[in-house]
Length: 230
Ligand SMILES: *Cc1c(COP(=O)(O)O)cnc(C)c1O
Image (cartoon, rainbow, N blue to C red; front, side, top):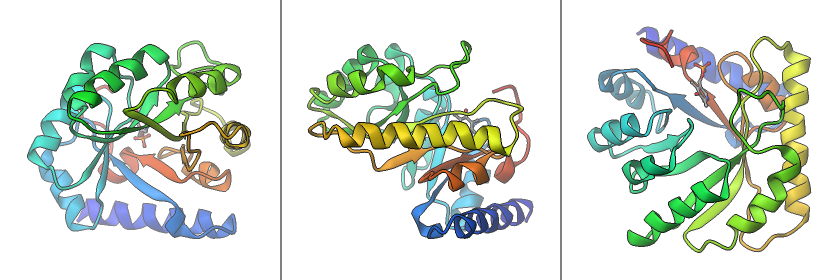
């Protein structure tokens, strides 16, 4: 009941933000971030029609996706190279690629399946030292290098805003990601798509949608406060 109510409220807020921005709400995919939440709650969300789920930890993604293989799983948290093997046959999209070495490891494992793994490049727009993500000035070079890997396909960019910013501050960060994606798209790097902008969480998704988000990653707004840290 609670979850259904939360979901409806989030979906309405997404639709409103889209309309305010003159966008079609259907352009925006809701990814329900289910980290720390039990499979039973995910099953409830599936009943409500949600078919995309995001996880931070590779092992948690692997575990839940083997129990619930019929939905799309998104690796949204930092991914260490030695954890790629847990998710390579399970992740529809990896949002958090920020180095060539990680992309090479994904390529190596994807080749064995074989599959072409869709990824997003995570960009650290704010430049906060604690955040993962490539710096904006190095993003195009990274895209060029990764574009040479046959089993990895870049489909867009991802970012995380900074805690504590107001709407205008969040919007500035998200608009910078959008502009970076347009600049990279303008380079027409073979095999590199700039279709997706994964940006916006529970507290800043309206600003992200105003700036052009195509995917929002919402956890606590749907499932309630996290059960443990992270
Ligand atoms: C946890 C997490 C989210 C969801 O955060 P909420 O504030 O609970 O909506 C989105 N993106 C990433 C990368 C996360 O780690």
